[in-house]
Amino acid sequence: MHPGPAGSIVKIMKNIETVCKKIFSLAGKVQCEVMAEVREGALTRFADNVISQNVASSSADYMVRLLDNGRTAKINFNQAGDDSLKRAIISGLEILKKQKKDPALLPLAKPRPVAPGKNLFFKETAELSPAYRAGKAAELAKACKRSGQISCGTFENSASELVIANNLGLFARHRETSATHSVTVRDRDGFGWAERTAHDVNEIPFALLNASARAKAAGSRAPKEIKAGRYTVILEPQAASDILSCLAVFGFAGQLYNEGRSFICGKLGKKLLSPLLTIEDNALDGAAPGMTFDYEGQPRTKVKLIENGIIKAPVHDRKTAKAAKTASTGHALPQPSYMGPIPLNLSVKPGQGTLEDLIKGTERGILVTQFHYTNMLKEQDVEMTGMTRNGTFMVENGKITFPVKNLRFTQNMVEAFSNVEAVSGEAVPCAAWGAMACPAFRIKNFNFSSSTKF
Image (cartoon, rainbow, N blue to C red; front, side):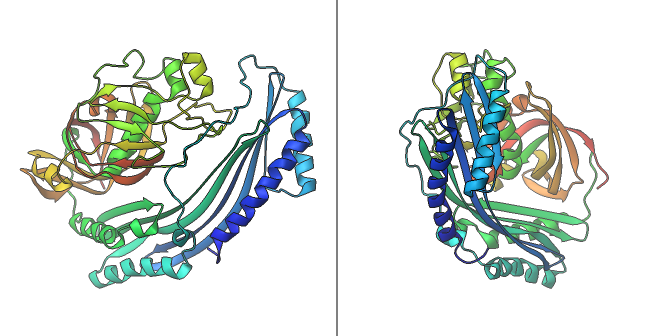
């Protein structure tokens, strides 16, 4: 990233306030909403124990939504000069005239008070130098060279700021930074992986991640093929978050709920899942915080999705809340949205003990580091398929006994998360649909539908 991105973003965002006023003036009496995002980021990629790529990018993108008399039009552009603005808005107004009326179209949102939330912008993270990222890549590469292993992966950092504004007086702003260290290590035919994302780069445990990936690669050499079937699984946080985020999104999206396409339909207040499972969507002060307003500038609220296995409530935006005759929880995506509102800041309540304790309590099962190629088969049942990757091990009598060749799973996740036997005591940040803080899980009768040859 070039020097001074934090200052650069502040300068651009001040200009965005002026740009919004110009857009509103050009829109005239038509209702007008502006979503403006400024992002600067950089990435260092390494492979075969050497850096292979350094890239940096910056962008300022605008999305303008126009509404008038039941009609709506949306335009996107990334040039904010006076001539460009004039051409874009004139074009949008012409498009607006030709749209069909939508009797269900809501007017733009009026301003409402928004909570300040946690500080998620860290200047040091925004301004990480290429030399810093290269140094972190080198730490892993040097260790791998000494042991005959091969490392690859990425280390990236970014700074962004988002503004939602409309000509009804709404103006909401959010800014944050992010750093992600993602590494894969190969040891002959063994592979190991580790990843962590944080708003503050100082919260990333680089040495621990590197050591974990290296140890798993060494321990994965000469994996054995096992039969497909149902096994107890110990899912590390990243593997658990991959499938749990789909359970939350496809189960608790307000539009899917209203349309009868969610597994929670008719189940509110009922115990459908394991009593060990509690999930809250909480962007304000939860373990996976984020924007305290949604993409219509409305305040986000804390929503308990699951409490001790009991289904509590879906999330809503203004449109789905009106249809359900309830209040919006502030979960709108950029409008119009085919998906409707979804939970994006999930905090999964930890249990007790460590990952090692989950392993010790397993008579016979499979430890999974990571899933990949996960896909939805049946949305309403949250039936999914995917494969294990980068560290899959057999556990017998409380100990890891040998590495396992990768397996494909085909599993109903409602069933899976009703079969939770134990949850670890630490929830770690994971990248999923949005952000999630997720612990490790032990789940019985998890269905591995086929084995592989690698």
